[in-house]
Amino acid sequence: MSTSHPAMGLPMVYLVDDEDVVRDALAWLLRSRRLLSEGFASGEAFEAMLDGRPDTRAGGDWPQAPSCLVLDMRMPGISGLVLFERLVERGLTPVLPVIFLTGHGDVPTAVAAVKSGAFDFVEKPFSDNALVDRVEQALAASGQAIARRQAMRAMSQRMAELTEREREVMALVVQGLPNKLIADNLNISVRTVEVHRARVFEKMDVKSAVELSNLLREA
Image 1 (spheres, one colour):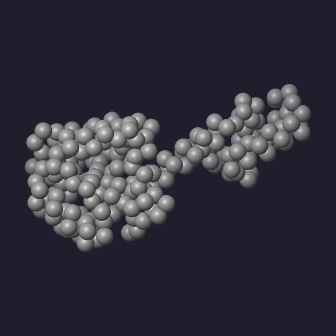
Image 2 (cartoon, helix red, strand yellow):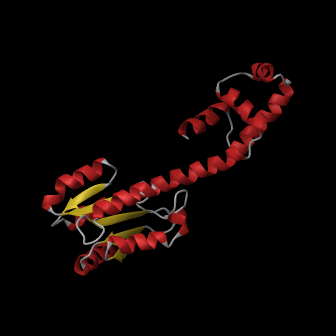
Image 3 (cartoon, one colour):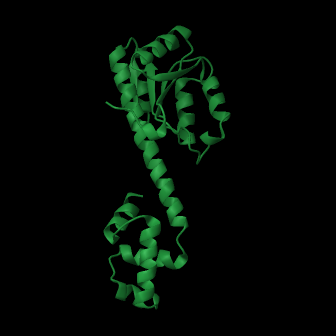
């Protein structure tokens, strides 16, 4: 499965595990599949990285490249589960899918985390290939989520450029009303409707009322 999104930059896998040997082994494994990684020895260290970046706050644009987090469920200090819950609160888990590493006794907790938004869990000892396959799938999901975020922000910017009258015309266009009925509804001339309609299409970067309706429905 391809995880390449050239316009977004190189994918990154974040590793949070309190055991150095585990982080090193995971980093080596990912390098063998040409994947970059960055390791953190604790949940606190990973949170400190996030807190040091202004673009990780609500409405921020981190990460800009496909990313995922491989997270040990049991760690001293902030546990993996608590860190995951904080990532959910930050709204990061769609663009930063979380894969838990878990021991047998933590499987029920890991299953519950998946139901609340974690990407998956992998039980120790794990198959190297199976883990990296899931990492690549998580990176692909991250890339799709980042693309959706970018598209939504671009559309919001286009919407902000519309005048109040253009918004009124657009609302009636997507209802399927012809220009004559739009003119009657707004008490303006058909020619004025045509001008506003053309400007709406130009600003929203669409060619037809159907395309405009689909764009707004997807949003």
